Image (tube, rainbow, N blue to C red; front, side, top):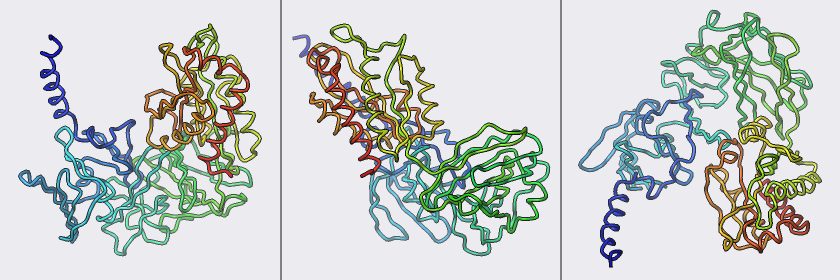
Length: 481
């Protein structure tokens, strides 16, 4: 009777809770990790509600539209309508409606604008593309790169992500193609240390400076494929300044995988030298080398090889779960991981790396940094679960949206191979699948606390079968026939 008396109150609390939830929580994909926004490769600061994904659409605060794209935004509270104008372009969007009007013409959007914690949130790509902004989604760094033309230029400009010619427009690098004139290239000479040498041999890229620290940020971009190295607090010395034409310079390539080398004074806030390797078909990877002399930075440029990191969960003083018969999870994970490594290494197209190959304790952050530093293409962590003795089955976990497809493929194969109940693909904030920068999955093959699961999991035949399924999943995801 007391339970029945409380039911209406419980329902009332649930209703109030749902009304108080942010709009995106009822239909959109809440942010699992921060989405970074860049305009002409300058990172934007979002101090209010963080951008988030609805499907594959990035939703951002209206301020990003107004301030960074340079549009005028007006709000009609009674109609819950946002009007965005820039030049002769006029867009009208209504909160919670996928119907938009572009210059008065009706058009349907994939997602609707919403209000979150008092902030108007708009679909970035839909609005931006109508205002002349180009977009590039980088799944590895979980970031949106936007490129807008220089509205003050005397000729139309098509934005290019690498932007070896750039000028300054209110503190933001403006990206223009190498064959276009820049009206105001970055000032140089006193803003940073001097880059005195840029050389690409048949093996490596070598950059030298007069003084200061050469520590670039690196982007790998596609269409066309290229590697971009940005050296902050650096400017080109006079020998390179003389080679610049419209703030763009080129060097011939001696490397078989690189078409040419481009360089520029990319920015003066801070002073930044940009070096771009335009790659030939098939692409390439870079691998940083120890500096041979002071004020020098080296990176080997080598043929791209798919790299997969296999992570055997736990190890040494971290035994993981204790099985129903007293066995350790760390032994199951290592044995299975080594079988995956052995099978996967037979494919010479894949570089297989292990976070541990013996009974060693590796901190979680070290596993993450290992995979990130190796620029791995995939990360797979193998585990065994534990709960009540009645629970049985296989679960596959992911955290970042770009890992979902990999998780689905892994789960499909390993569930069939293990033969345990299907406990679905799930989201969890495990550090090794949150902080890694490539698609990353953690698979709980079975429950060590369940007599049926555990009896199978320590048998070689079972582990061989699971290992083969994981290899098949990796190859399918990487599209390796």
